[in-house]
Image (cartoon, rainbow, N blue to C red; front, side, top):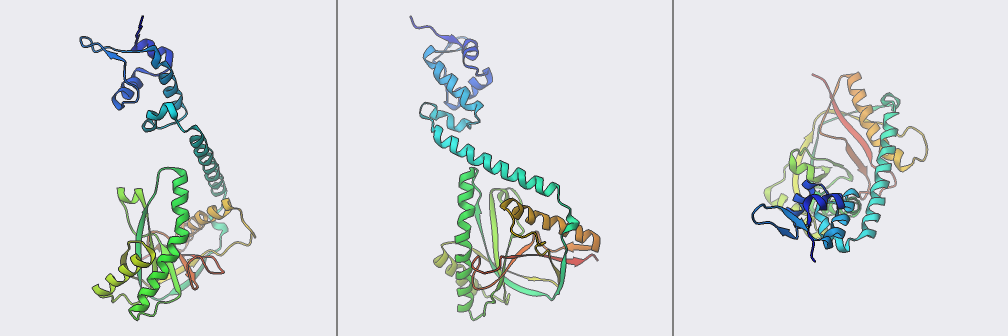
Length: 298
């Protein structure tokens, strides 16, 4: 005899709530075996108990609802590997947060250099930020290859236009906001250069970078105003751990904010510039220098 279980009985046996049963029914994850046409009451087959229990446990393990359709052949090994990676990243950022929470912004000593107005030209491009930890690592790791390729193609295009590109260049985050900015990261590679670029010159730069680096870019220009370039040299702690390296980037920002408040300065731009002097990005003997641009308050 085929016995059905009421929704209440199925809930008691599997651990799934009535709300979860309705949601999974709507999503096609776990549909009732029968629905009474008169009362609209749902009932389930005892053969569905294993599915119900498995789905409940997967959700307790944090598996997204969108992946529950695969309950019968769920990739447990892949999920465990992802959780190990995620946990390692959580531990890493906890360590960075602890390092920053204990730091003193006044400990870093600022060095200021007066700088004249500087016209520049650059290329800007964006790339998506995936939701999964492993995919994010792969995307950001790929930038170690993409950035130098874009920079080299940009330099070649400037040379084609007889603009004599300088070896001094920098990367920065463009002034973008809104929902789209939360879903992707943007990067600008800029060089001191004449901003008097014709429409044909801009098209040449974009096409050359697309052809030789495989990246679609927008050509941007601007002028850094008369300013103070402020840096925070390494504090002599010697070789630092990866946690200390990442924390130091944030500590410089805190030190800069503290310095601006003390000296009456206003930051220029959204973030610091990563300045490089050499033949290629990431191929220099010295690492990029973090430079903050500021002006005295009016």
